[in-house]
Amino acid sequence: MPKKMAIPEIKAALKTLPEWKRRAAELQREFEFAEFVEAMKFVNAVARAAEAACHHPDIDIRWNRVRLALTTHDAGGLTERDFVLAARCDALANKRGRSAGC
Image 1 (tube, rainbow, N blue to C red):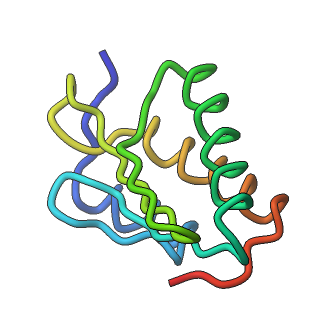
Image 2: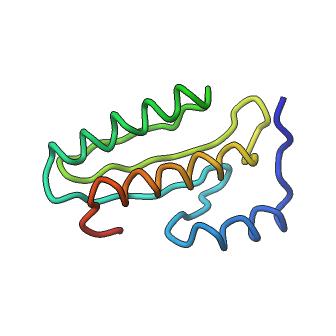
């Protein structure tokens, strides 16, 4: 089982992901795309990355906006796995031509 991170570790890791926010035991970020189709392409890319990592985010889709929430349920909070997948999602968004972050 992955090890739950301590608050100082979380704060340090968040410095590498400035657009992500910690909300209780989750990492959250909203992505905005030019149109719905681009948002869905991003969601599909995230799904493939999540499946490969065996670590699945909560995904909320609102037309051209996608909100991701990451946590490691079996560890009871945030782990390194959440930060690794968050960084991968950032890379996927940049590849897709994300229009603006929120």
